[in-house]
Structures are given as C-alpha cells and as structure tokens.
Length: 166
Image (cartoon, rainbow, N blue to C red; front, top):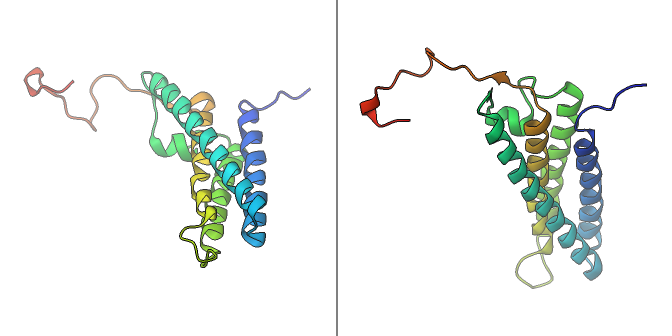
C-alpha cells in the first residue's frame, strides 16, 4: 500500500478552497445579484482568514526551522529550489496563480456598480493570501532545505565584536 504524500491534506485543502473561490467569484461576477455578491464576499474573506492563519503558522514554523536549515523566502512561499516535490509545487503554485487571475479578473469585470461606489467583487483580491499562506505552511512543515552552514562563509564577511552586529 502506498503511503500518502506528506502534507497532502494542505494540498487538497488548497485545491478545494480554490475551486469554491473560483465558482462563487464567477457566479457573483456574472449574476451580480444580492445573494451571490454576499456569498462572494464571505468566501473571499474566509479564504483570506485561512491564508492569514496559515501564513502566520508557517512563518512561525519556518523561523524555528531556520536555526538548522537555510530557508529562502522564494523556496518557502513558492516551493522552488527542490523544496517540494514537483507535483506538490505544481499544484500549490497553480492554485495560487488561479486565485490571483480569478481575483483580478472578477474585480475588474464590473466597471459599473449600479451607481454606487465600490464593488463587492473587489474583496476577491484578498483570497490569494490563502495560496501564499498554505504554500508557506507546506514549505515550513514538509519542505526540504539545505542545512545552515555555521562558521566561516565567503558570502558573509566576519564581523568584529566592536561592530555591534550579532
């Protein structure tokens, strides 16, 4: 029996929540009626909330791991540099890309808002925070990073104690 891939729950959550966001955003943009506009706002804010929680959790986990691992921001949030298996990186980054495209497309799809300022569709631009946060959480929890090098490094000059740098 095949073992499930580490972090598959996060990948599945990202894909499922992205599908819900895409569906509700498109319906809200096309119909632009009261119940769907409200549903679109609630889903966008829900995705944003999931993203903030995941981002903070992932950041905290990455800070703990950074004592032993050399973690780059690009690897953490975009799963590059062999941080994640190709299949995970492709799914997670595709979900993030879809979130961005749908958020921007639906936000600009209504140039008129029935005479009132603003559009509820603009809340959609908050949703890609979910993709960033879940990428960061996956990377911080399950990602592979090079070990931190201690000692002399040609990249960072040695600092004298008098420099005041830690």
